[in-house]
Image (cartoon, rainbow, N blue to C red; front, side, top):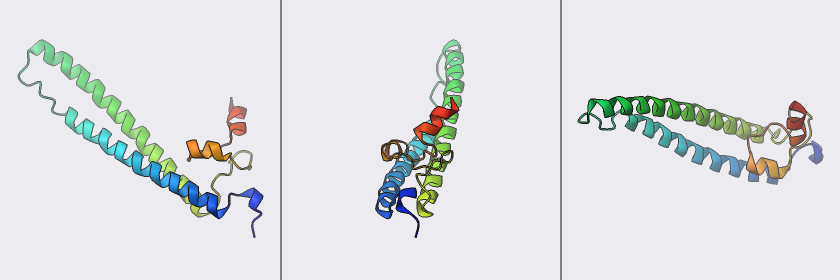
Length: 126
């Protein structure tokens, strides 16, 4: 049997799994919203406006597409990180700092459920 001090209990892991699943659901909904906004940017009704305004609008549209694209990329990475955290829950390695090997604090994991490093390890990186 694994020493309980070196990993979170099954009850804790179940609680973290629930938190992660909720975050994945919300993150996926946010990603769908971002993608939907991107698709709507393709046709924002400037066809009948003056050429000068249309030029400004097209510049703004390009910036908006780039911003939405960056948001989508970040959101996809966030979802991937959450799914990796879910995998760690399943194999009971969730919550272990990849640098120190110690348990990451529960409060940190509740806020940042995809964290792989403790605050201590994060501070060592600076």
